[in-house]
Image (cartoon, rainbow over all chains, first blue to last red; front, side, top):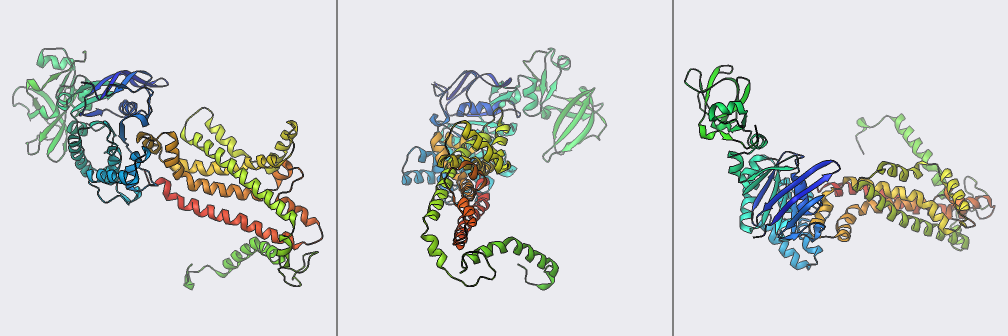
Length: 332
Length: 271
């Protein structure tokens, strides 16, 4: 089966900066694919390469089997939801949504009907006559989504579309985007720096750093079995354990990753384990986050609320199941 | 606008303000009054009598019509040139990054900061060096130098307030370069261009200094008025023309002011 989007050693340099550095990537049709990484990691440039706003310095990109190099954005069957939504302020909502059809030469009645349908799809029916300036952030986001979807793209690109929304709205939109993608069956490529967003929405996640993909996998893969220290740390702030420490528990001299929620904290003298000192506690609502110092190694543990906790500064013993200690591929 | 007396400004301040306004506008009113005087050789106060005959006299003077038509044509064509060049230049400066961008920005604005007499002398010597005979087009060229600046400034300010991803969004939705310009860029900068164009027209219409250096035998309206002041006959004709000039230049400037003021919400609301 042809991939929806395929990168072969694609690179994009800006002067001496390697924004995207020899990236190989296959995105399957109908997939909800997230590109996750800190700012400046190359994820947005990758998205712009797919959209056609950037051309690869070297390597090649194909979209549904067609070579994309040199094809301008307006000849690609790909649409983008922009971070700042980029709605046209001089047009009302209906004409914004119908814009793609208008430039393709569709008649007024036809394009307005399609735009109304798209607005209904994003649950904004009847908002057509308003100006973008009269809408809230969440509503603009939906208009931007409708404006992209009305063109029936084969790939929909979303550039941090939820970044400007407040938490509650963001969570609603996450669910909505997910069900919309399922219903439409369009390939979604989603750029975000929020690991929670990537894990909860995507079928697969690519973790970017320094223009390279550090790891591609299902959210579970990425979270439970990070390949490198960067992935372990960036995705869910795992405890990265140095090889010497890991050797004591697994017998292998490798970097290890231990999720904060896998660590159990007991009082000192309660038996075997890693002895440590409780540095501070952070109440997070459903859980409490503990900062621990195990002989100079800073660790974090997350325990459910209601766990009996020793006082700050007291000695504690840490235990964990051996199978939760994940050994990473990165050379020691 | 306040009506309650306790909050109003002290009398001295009111008098000072009134004097300031009178100082600025009384001379203009005088010009209007003299357009109706019956005395044609010199301006005497008070006017010995009032008449509207000078409007008819002015209407029938071919030299007035020639000067007026030249001024309108020069202003229109200079403005047209300025609209094209100023828009292109502002788009280049605000939409792309290239070596020497700041320098170009400064060089474009310079002609309006430069005294008109410098621009005039520079153009005149350039024309004679290049053996270009003075004509309608040399006047247009001279006026275009400062008209471009006005359009450029207006357009650059508008571009700065327009979200850059809008153009990308348009391309993304299937519009090519021309369609994007026609449907997205132009509607967003239209009021800025209209305002810049009107201002440019008004500037060109009453320009004297650069014109004296770049015109040959032809007379634009302001030049014709200067010449007319020396002649002893039919002086109020100049005043009638002056009234027309005030109206022709004031109205576009007022319109430009209101257009750019209202335009504030247009460009920024999409963000």
